[in-house]
Image (cartoon, rainbow, N blue to C red; front, side, top):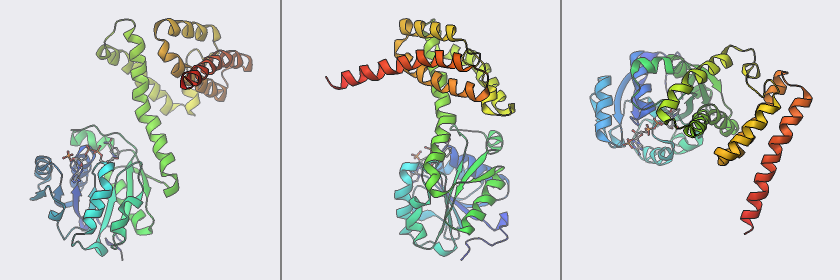
Length: 319
Ligand SMILES: NC(=O)c1ccc[n+]([C@@H]2O[C@H](COP(=O)([O-])OP(=O)(O)OC[C@H]3O[C@@H](n4cnc5c(N)ncnc54)[C@H](OP(=O)(O)O)[C@@H]3O)[C@@H](O)[C@H]2O)c1
């Protein structure tokens, strides 16, 4: 049975939310602003449930799951990934109208399998992950632009796909269907695009620290170049076309200087520099900006470092 009518009118959704954190707050505020009717808000910390309910004009809020309104037909679970399993198990013991209920979780790493106790009770289950990063305390104005992103959607049921598409579109986003077995690879791609960008900024900051600059100063210095690089990625015909710099130009002498300086000033960064530089040579080859000879010369230097690194790791692990 379909949990919500096939016509999927926004006004037919009767929504409850569990997890008034960074994403839960942004989603609830955005959906409420486009006409979704919220009935109840639950959060482990009561004051956060109360604050979100207050901002939505919802009278029902609680720190326990049994306060979820029995009139709910759309249940949004925006608790942390580690809490999803136990929340789903507890929800399955409650007297909820499961055959009229669609349950959505928003994890990038987990599939609808984590909601199996609810599916076994007859609920439709959806995994709908915004390919976006939401800091805590995001304003509703910022949330509107943050949701203009892709949503990785996975559900075993056609009805689930339809409801997931509706929610993603109402939030202002676009849908990318993710097969259940591809969810981990999908998540890895997200971690590389977002989390490791932060790691790269942190690495740049470590090198700048050798010049005596504070992380706060570095953030101001690197922000324009990082932002423009993202602009270049967005506007270039391919990601490879956005590459500039010494490897793109095939300048082996500059890379040799970098390696010498790193080994003197911040030797612990040599392996990560070499690993990233090897991947950057692949990008430059893809772009067609580097000759075979220059690529080989640079790769020889870099692979020498990664070889030495793995030899020293092997000898230290055999001690
Ligand atoms: N933030 C992002 O950038 C982002 C992006 C995409 C997807 N997601 C997904 O969104 C979900 C939520 O992430 P988040 O970043 O919003 O986490 P978060 O800010 O830590 O919020 C999680 C919320 O869930 C509440 N909670 C935890 N366990 C609970 C339980 N057993 N019962 C009731 N409430 C409980 C927490 O309450 P307390 O504060 O009391 O602990 C907190 O308010 C996760 O599945 C995450 O993978 C997040």
